Length: 183
Ligand code: ATP
Ligand code: MG
Image 1 (cartoon, rainbow, N blue to C red):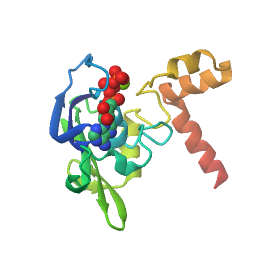
Image 2: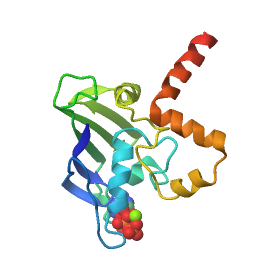
Image 3: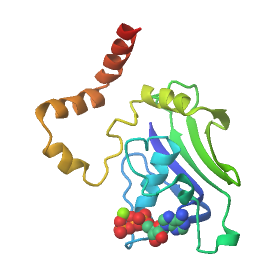
Image 4: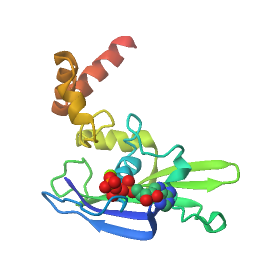
């Protein structure tokens, strides 16, 4: 499984609709400071709901909506879609291509957040469940942020062991066991 394409609509510095293709094995993104490289990573964390323990570098969720400084013309929603190639069926769905979408909409009474799986509305925990089958989790290291490497180097061996368990997929079962024992 790999990310084939990301589609941004009004997300952070990506006004209107922007499509970014990714390659199978390796993709690097380069560009001048402030051109939006990290915003692409923020988009992945946002759309997949992986941002709980990480920062999206925004004070509030609505700051993620594209803003060109003109308050009246600001769009009222932001949307990010991650298109996965699932020909290897790492996600247990019978589809070669899987699209996970998140949209936030700002209204006078607050903001609303929606997730979609191949176009169908789902909950955040549905998204987490399906991604965890492919060993993509909010606690995991599928996304390595700036500073993470230094943090791992300075950790205690027990803390580092937890990360290995997470990557190996052991902790999912540890968590389930602990929950079952508590019931
Ligand atoms: P660096 O090389 O310095 O790490 P970068 O390519 O990672 O830069 P980003 O941090 O992704 O750059 O992009 C920062 C830019 O995104 C800033 O110019 C900021 O103004 C813009 N930006 C962030 N949020 C919004 C928003 N809601 N609307 C419009 N622009 C935004
Ligand atoms: Mg950056």
